[in-house]
Length: 116
Image (cartoon, rainbow, N blue to C red):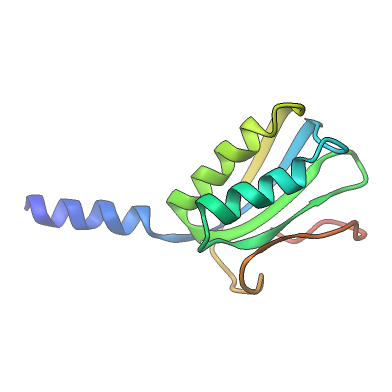
C-alpha cells in the first residue's frame, strides 16, 4: 500500500503537461526573455518551448514538460530578473501536443498569440 502511493505520487509529478503563460509588468526591455531562457535551459533541460515579447507589453511563454519542471518555470517567471517588475503571471494548463520541437528558445514578435 505504501509502495503504491509513492508510485502514484511519482507518476503525478512526472506527468507531461503544457503550460501557456502571460507575464505582465515591466518585463520588456529588461532582459526578461533571455533570463527565462537561461534559467530554463539550466534548471529544466528536458522542457521544450518558446518565450517571446508580445505587442501589448507582456511576455508570452509556452512550454511542455513534466509538471514539476513547469512549476519551476512558473517560479522563474514570477521572480524574473532583478531589474524586472512582475505584476502578474496568468497561466493556462493543457495536455501536451508535441508541436514545440526540442529545446527551449526565444522567439520574436509574431501576429496573434500561440494557441494554448
